[in-house]
Image 1: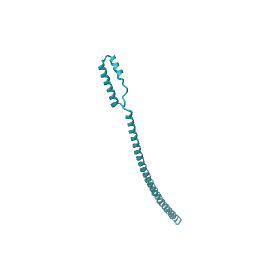
Image 2: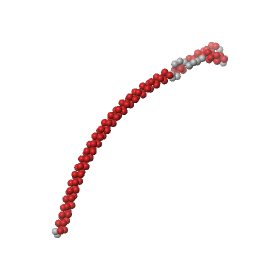
Image 3: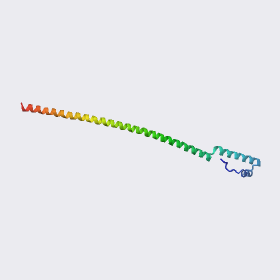
Image 4: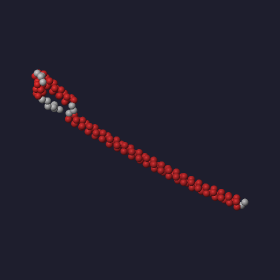
Length: 133
């Protein structure tokens, strides 16, 4: 980066006006120029530095975007597999539940007929007891 404009001649004139002799003013001017140069080259961020960081951040973001897309596709695949598994398990449970209802319905029908026969037998016995006695 180019150094900011530093007018050494004007600086020396001001130092002389303040009481410095020529040699002191020139030494002070040179020292000030070195300090400014050091400050600019070592401490201040340059436009090139910012452009480099900006490019680096862009590259990092593109890399992260790619990884994020890969991760999302992986998660999507796993979710689809899990959904298929759940649907399969749900279908199996639905089938088992339906079979159990059919089995219970058969038992209730059998129980219904058995109770009907028992009730009919009880009524027949009651008639026999009361009518034939």
